Image 1 (cartoon, helix red, strand yellow):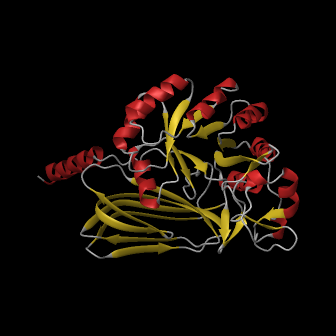
Image 2 (image 1 turned 180 degrees about the vertical axis):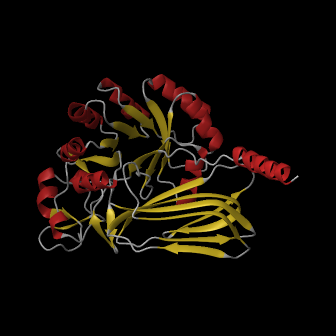
Image 3 (image 1 turned 90 degrees about the vertical axis):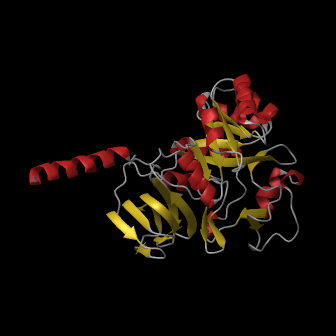
Length: 363
C-alpha cells in the first residue's frame, strides 16, 4: 500500500512538472540604444552615440548598438540623436552649458568639433562630436554590429564599405531605408507607423532580403502582430518600450530588443552572487526581498516562475504581473553602474513561486 502511494505521488509530481513549461521565453537579440551610455548621478559618464559607448557595449557583451546619424551644414555625417546639441554637449572652452540652441544642421563640422565637447563626468571622455566613420571604426575593432537609425542614404554606403553586410539599417522613411539594398544585403528594419501586421508584411516582402519591423508603438505590437510578422519570416524589434511593456514584448516573443537597460549577455560569465529558491508561498501583501553589494560595473538577471500576482521591484524598475495556468516563466535582465541590486517581490493576493533564481555578474 505504501509503495503504491509513493508511486502515485511520484507520478502526480512528474505529470505536474511535465505540464508546466519551465523554460523562459528565448532572450531577444539585444541592441544597446544610442550605445551603452551610462549616467553618473544626473550627468553622463558615457555619453550617447559615441565610440566610448561602443567599447562599453563590448564590455557588457552587447552584440549590437544603435546610433543616430545627422548631416552637418557642410554634409559631414556625425552622431547626434537630437536636432540640437544642447542636451549632450558642453562648451569646449570652460565646460559650461551651451547657452543658446545649436542645431547640428546649422553648423559646419569644424565649428562643432572646435567649440563643443561631449558631456561627461570624466574629463578624458569630453571629446568632440564623433563622426559616423569614427563610430564604425570602433564597431569594427570590437566586433559590434552597428544599427544605423538614419535616413541619410550615404550612411549605408559608408557602413557597407567599412562593415560589409554586418550592420543594420533602420528608419521610418521606407524610401530611404530601402536604398540600403543598393549597397548591401544587411538587415533592414522598418518603422511601420500604424500599419497593420498584414500591411507591414507586404512592405517587407516588397523590400526583399533580410528585413523586419521596429516600432515604439507598444499598443500595436501585441502578441498577434508579433506572430504574424514572425510567421512571414521577418524580424520583430521592440524599440525602447517602457519597463512593463518591454517585459511583455519579451514574453510575447520579439526577436530583437532595443533598450536603454535590457541585458541578458550571460554566456561565458560566472555569477559572483546567486540565489535559488523553489516552492515559496507568499500571502497577500507578503514580500520577499534580496540585495547584494556589487562592483562598479555589474549586471543582474532574474528568472521567475509563479502563479498569482506579483509586484516586482527590480533594481528600481517596477512590474506588476499576473500568471495563471501554464504561462512561461519570466526572465528579466538589467545592466547596472555604481548601483547595488535590489529585488523585491510583493504578493498581491496569495501567490505561489514555483522557482526563483537571481544571478549577479561583475562586468
